[in-house]
Length: 503
Ligand code: KIV
Ligand code: ZN
Image (cartoon, rainbow, N blue to C red):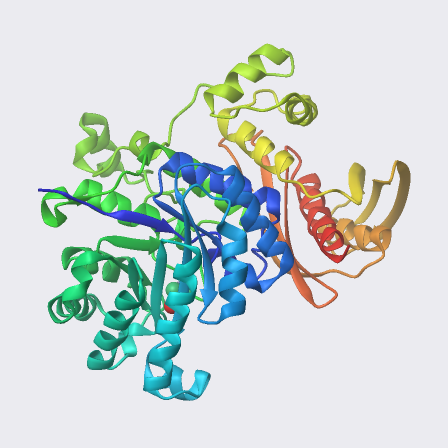
């Protein structure tokens, strides 16, 4: 009999803790809607007490995204729990997720509490949350480094106080698979009350074992796995959702467990998260990396041509990687664009459609054919733009290996055209210097990534940047058939995020 494993996605909370990956409200909603299409059971939409903007963004997700449970994280204190309830109470199925450290290291060094007072703090917090919300998850932070007897007491106490889900995190990625699986099995044996709640795990990837630990926990009885798209998250990241789901799908006889994830939505979700958080996916990343289904050696190609199962254990179509026939050009009409968008799952109102249409024409004028990947990039970037203090208008560059590169950039600020010129040690640097002058701030480039959205010499270029502005890091993304323009758009996008944030 196959057990149903619940997928708790924390991309919008643990994932968002990656420096520079902060999302605005629109972006959070866009990703949450895609997570709902993907079929996750729970969306942890954020940490409401961290800022009023974060609370409002989670509230919007709770009110607009239907299907999954929507959870908000809270420390075990009333103020956080109040904020969490305020944020999730509009959801069809709200959950408050309370956490408190349980290891001696956390109790002594961070919380400065003894075990007994931490235990009553946990019980009080769960009872307080339960008065608002039927569904309360309790996480014993740093569980994998917690004394086992004490961990059992914490779990039992939280259940008796009303927790409906108990989460066992490997907060610092210290566990190893056999040991972590064993921990889950022993907990189930020692805490009979666990039979009436959902037992969850949450693993970090500091030793590269987050997925292995999660899957070992599933084998030993865990019913919920907490994970993120592309494995993004604090430090080395969290367990990757797509890997866990595809392990269970590819090896059903080993785990006798399955999820309800619509696996053909995986690739699209991965691209969307990468783009909106500005975190590139490494080419050799399992399941969603650019090379995950690429066969380069002659022997492998020969095998694949004879029968794909010689070197493929999953079908690219199963995770939503399709070789779409390119269909749109600058001459494709509005109806064709609308049709293609709806094929890709976008149902846009008139105002959003007009924005996408105008950017589509701008790109299609320079790129002969627009494929699904191009269109997806255009839609995601256009629809999740923050209100733009500065919008990109024009760019000219002069560059070569025997001259000092020079850029001239034109932007629009509240309808007014502003232009400036600058030099740099390369064309991109000259453009960035010029944008600094136009917006009146000095950006420090922390990260710069440039890639082609599709194959071919005329591919759409996608630039991702992380820029330090006035002491904080902002990310930006931009696309264009011209890679220097894509870079300029990305850099300007980071400034617009900074300016939207400072209002
Ligand atoms: O890693 C961790 O322990 C967490 C908890 C808040 C669940 O993220
Ligand atoms: Zn975590």
